[in-house]
Amino acid sequence: MPTQPNSAKTVKTVGQLLLLAAAVSAAAGIAAAIGFSTSLAPIYAGVALAGIVTLILALFAWQRIRRIEADVVEREAVVLVQRKESERNQEAILRLLDELAPLADGDLTVQATVTEDITGTIADSINYAIGVLRDLVSTINQSAIQLDGATRQTQGLSQHLAKAAAAQSKQLVAATESAATMAGSTEEISGNAERASDVARHSVDVAHKGGDAVRRTIDGMNSIRETIQDTSKRIKRLGESSQEIGNIVELINDIAEQTNILALNASIQASMAGDAGRGFAVVADEVQRLAERAAAATRQIEGLVRTIQADTNEAVVSMERSTTDVVGGALLAENAGAALEEIEQVSNQIASLVQNISASSRHQASEAQSIARNMQVLKEISGQTAESTSATSQGIAKLAELSADLRESAAGFRLPADAPTIISDTQRVRALAASEQSGSRPRPPIQAAS
Image (cartoon, rainbow, N blue to C red; front, top):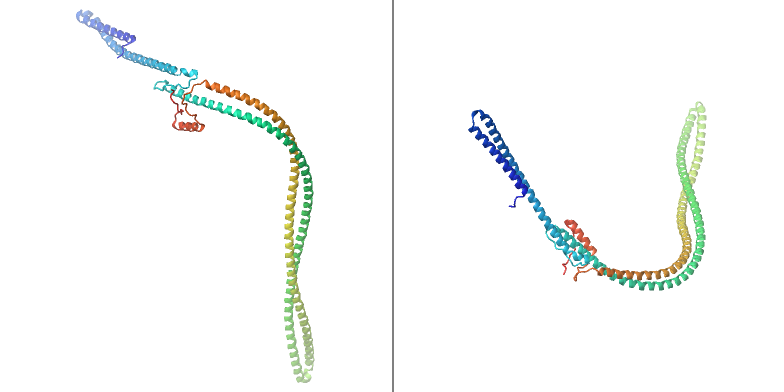
């Protein structure tokens, strides 16, 4: 048990004194109440009671003081533990600073000791930073070496570029002359293409007019065909009507023959009747003559009807031939129209192609002129390139000096003899992804300093 502090001792002593005083007071009051006269007994009894009450209060005060004493002891123990923890942390920090002292001189071989103290996490982070710094210095060294080689190679390239610029300038002069000649040729081609475009447009107009004429012809042939077909139907109906007329004539002829027979029979009967039948005989003779005339008329009508039927049949056959011819002519006209439509389509395509050629020729002429101007500009740029090449050579020389300065700056750091391999960007990305999934911070592989 640790020694009680002074404050706790003081509180304990005060409590003991209060308890002792209360006990003495109570004892004195009781003794006085017992040993003195009855007239003073109430007074001493009150004193004894006050002493007892004081004793009880002293006991309560004593318990309270004991609790206060315990709290004071516990708090002072916590303060003592914190003081020791602070001293231990201070020692760990001083030890870490001693380990990292060479780092201020550029010594990257140091490595902090990772312990369970408060500085353990700090030491781990510092080791990680030292590892990254090692990689950075190694990268700077390698970059300086590569930069030195690149500057030397670039110097050779700049000299080669100067020679190439001079040769390019000569070639650009010749190319400029060729571009001017090409511009003149393309302008002539553009003029020819425009004239061909006019001819193609005229051909399209002619083909379009021919197509319209053929279409009108086809419409006329179709109208004629419909008219002939309608006339043929009418003639057929006329033949059918003449056939009906012939039937009616035959019926009239039969009636006339029967009437003639009846008139003959009536004449015979009238002659047999004598004078009484003469008037009837005259009527019978007249009826017989009318019947004969009707028979003669029906024979004439029958001849006319047969003639009409023959003419009608011939007209129907002729109409059918005409219809066939008209249909054939319409087919030929339709074929001619289809051919003209194809000609019109081809003419449109040719006109479109010629127009495209004309537009392309105009564009080529414009481009040729632009090329000629650009070639002139390129010739000027070529001269500027030669001047820029010289300035580039001077800049490369300056870059070589900066590369040497960079190597000297990196040489001020001390690396382990077996420095770790430089971590690639891909490895860093994978390490970061793995650390994010696990929730821990990635650390590069650090080799202990020799």
